[in-house]
Structures are given as structure tokens and as C-alpha cells.
Image 1 (cartoon, rainbow, N blue to C red):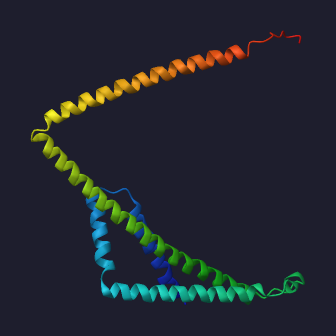
Image 2: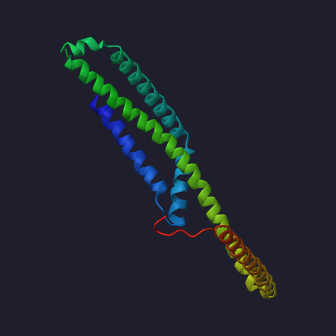
Image 3: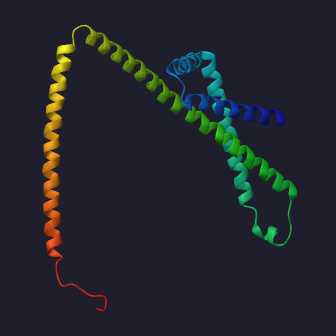
Length: 194
């Protein structure tokens, strides 16, 4: 039993380290290497068989622990209230709870690793595509795109002027509304004694 728990615990530690590697903000080069290793491992037939076998075992252990814990919920509370405590049952209940938590954590981490890995794969792909587009844009600009850049600058400056006019008009409108509102509140003045 201790060998089984050692394997379960080491599997959970390995899963947490894997998840940490996926989540860390690493450079693109390192992250793409991690993703390529992950893809290479997960596409191997032996790994898929091992993963399916492991998921099946953990699911069966999880289900078994649930069944055992249901048995302890049916124990009458009268025994506990009358002072009768069976320590063997309490130890067995504790072991079932521990195994339930460990097997549940392993199954949850498997889902988490799969989800995070798919997100990181997409992120690496988009980052590579983005860098490629930036490189292509820089190459096209050095090849004679200066005239179009000048035209873009003029268009942007004109757009900024239009937006500034809109902002000034809104400020005038706000000031007019504020003075009209203040005019509505001019009423009787009250003294301290009122």
C-alpha cells in the first residue's frame, strides 16, 4: 500500500511541476521547446496506452473511495453519542478520505494540464505568426514604404484634429449643462440657525 501511495504522490508532484512549467512566463524559444516535447510525448502510442491505463486506475480508486466513505456516512450517530468509538473504523475512514483527495487531485490535474497545454500551444503558434508578420512588415517598409508612411501620418494627424474638436465641443456642452443645473438649485439661502 505504501508503494502505491508513493507512486500516486510522485505522480501528483510530477503533474504539478509540469503545470508549473506551462504556466511560467518563459521566453518563446523555451516555451516552444516545452510545447514540442509535450506534443512529441503525447503523440507516442505507448504514452497514450499508459495514460489511458492510469486514468482508468485513478477513476476506479476514486470511485472505490466514494463507495467506502458512503458506508461510513450510514453509521449511526448514536454510537458516537454514547461514547463508543471504533478507532479502526476511524483510521479506515481517514485512509479513504486521503485516497479520495489524492486520486481526485490527480484526475483534476490531468484535466488542467490538458487545458493549459492546449492554450499554450495556441499561444506559441500565435506568437510565432505574430513575429513572422512583424518581420514581413519591417521588410516591406524598408523596401519603399516611406511614401505610404507619410500619408498614414497625415491621415492620423487629421483624425486627431477631428477628435480634439469633438472633445472641445463636449467640454463646452458639459460646462453649459453644469451651469444650467446650478441655476436650478439657486433657491433660498439658509443660515446656520435654520
